[in-house]
Length: 453
Image (cartoon, rainbow, N blue to C red; front, side, top):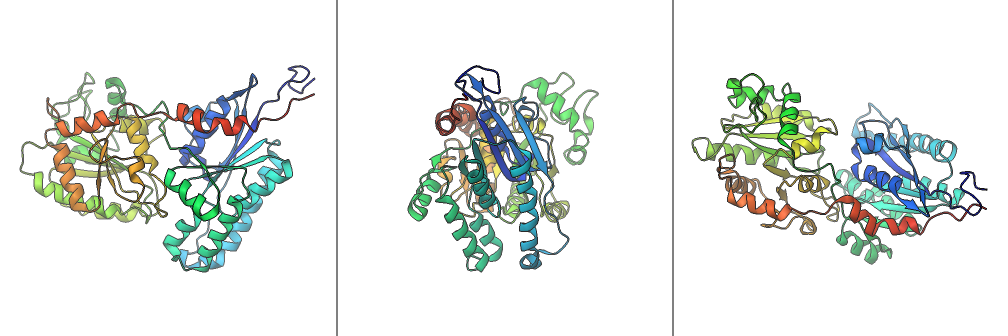
């Protein structure tokens, strides 16, 4: 009899360890993997998931509340030393992370059948997860979101010894994995040509809870965000809001005819996103529309956390805007999709360090039926099709021109025809689960454990 009591020769449940050397709450793709794996049934047995990563932001409710997902969280390495001292503290950081991760992988979690690890970060994750997979006799699967050596090269320069070591390290473990997923076809082709491995392409897709927001949800959301929107309400003349109303909705929960247009952007506030480009475009747009009655007032909301947030917030505070306003927010996981689903337009400033990955924030926006203006790079066309589901720009003046074309009359009874066309192009965007079931599930179904005799 099996330990599950299912009977002679019963198939034991598949156990997958999903490993993220980062804040699990800010790793949506790996959370979606965990949810899909926990829902995967093989031979009549539902699978189990051990989700390993940093303690930080809360996971999405589908993960937090799932009975077959167990979370093993630990604290990240922190230091007060400046980034210039990276060479000095890097070995200590690796050693500390090795110990913390090894303790969980080798001593805390039950023996998994498969390890699914996110890359990057690469060091020391790939080495330790590979070693654990060999000790347990488990499959070693890498989910390539980007490359660690290109991320490191952005700050250190591509000729830095650490960058060359990182590339060699990643290629070494890439050749030792049992399976791979990549986020783009361009990445798959590069890995095949450079490293001789062929990942399965698993595009990012939005899960079911990214969708257009209902009137009741929108009214409740803006009520909850009233404090964070106080500066926007003052700047955009929302002083006449009646009792029970919000900046965007009336007391009955319907959109106000005098509401501002809402433009959303999400950023990690790092050097790989030129947020100054958006601020320059807003300043130019504001100057061009401030005396034009065809344009509504416009609120730009930027979400996310990161090292450069305070720097740009100071820049925002010095902007002399008249018909627009910019504010930052940090949202609960349940509110982020609702705000995207309430917006008129999205803006994405993501540029890939490798030129081979795609911005997940655009995927989220598409899931909510929201068209985007996105800064262009090599493989962006795998997601954003210019003039069909969004617009692509290279300079702040182009972004200003695009906002001018898409926001004219957007809050009026007729709306904006160009924006409506883009919304039609976004409609029907495929969801995460059917995409995962088609491309990822076969990898794990082939890794199921033998029957328990």
